[in-house]
Length: 271
Ligand code: PML
Image 1 (tube, protein in one colour):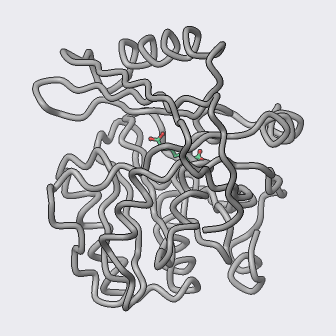
Image 2 (cartoon, protein in one colour):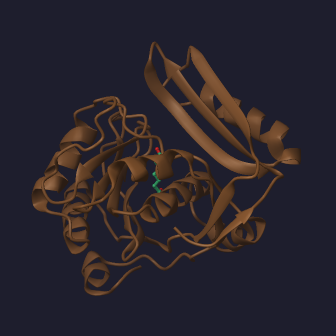
C-alpha cells in the first residue's frame, strides 16, 4: 500500500452478471468520464455474450471516485510457464506455490475450493499454512474491486502484448492480481478461469510475478475461481476492506518476459 493522490475526475465502473443467482461474469475498471459510455456498452456486451451462458441479471455500477485517496502501484511482471499438458500444469501449480512459501495443505484446500464448483464469484481467502477458509461471509468469496490502469502503463502493456492471445483478459487478470498482491498479508494467488473455453490460469505473488500456466484445466470444464493465500497474523478485515473498496491505479507496467521452464522459474526470484 503505497503513494497516494486525489483524482476527482475518475469513476469506478463494475459489472456483474448472473443467471438464477449463478455467477456468469464480472469485470471492471477505473476510468475518466468520457470513457464511461463506451466501457458500459463493452461490459454489457461481454455479459450478454459470455460462454458461461445468458444472464438473467446484469448490474453495472458507476461511482465517482471523489476526494478519495487513490493508491498507485506497479503491475506484476508477466511470464508464461512452458507447459504442454495438464499433469505438468498441476506440478507447476504445486511447485510455484511451494516456492512462494504456501503449505501443501493450503494448496490442496485451494484446489478443492476451486474445483468443488462452490460458485465463487470473488476470491476465497485461505490460510497459507493450513488451508483454513478465512472469509466467512459467503461461499462466493471476496470481490477484488476498484482498480484501473493509467494511460502510460496501458500503452506499455499494449506495446508488448500485441502477440499475446486474449490480450484484454490477461490485462484485466494481471491488474487484479497486482492489486491482490499489494494487499497486506497476501502471500500468493491461484486463479483458474471459470470460462469453459479458457484453459490458462495463473499463480502470482510479489516475488514470483504473474506466472501464466497453460493447460491448468480441461477444455469444457466450467469450474474455476480464485484463491488468495493469507500470511499468518494478517488483519483479515482490513485486507477485505482494501480488496473491495480501496481504489488502486496501476501506474507502471511491469513487462512481459519470455516463456520460462518451471525449473528456471523456481530457481530465480521472479519472472
Ligand atoms: C478469467 O478471466 O476468468 C481468469 C483469467 C485468467 C487469465 C490467465 C491468463 O491468460 O493470463
